[in-house]
Image (cartoon, rainbow, N blue to C red; front, top):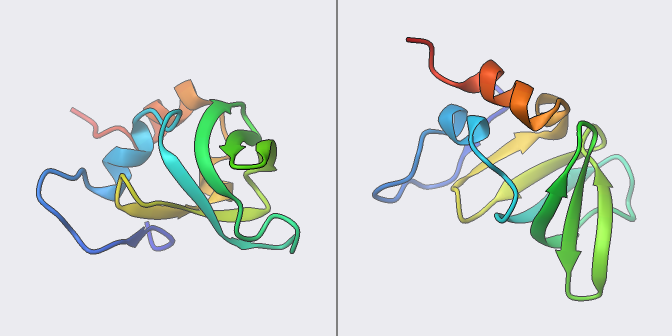
Length: 101
């Protein structure tokens, strides 16, 4: 996918496409770009995920962030992705991005 940006590789990290197929709840996340300036720079841990939003625990409390309006960076997983690609139910994203056998 052209919109996935690889952060410098380190040993043991998954490829971005496989990382998107995995669980994002519990990962650190940062809003790297957004069409809404109020969302830009929100950083914390994903504590819940719905089809269209992430619930992110920040230092100032929990914030609901719409996926479609943002581009996210997941520093622990080593990738970033556009929210429009993530805007689906977590269980459907697994089917969409998991490697075919």
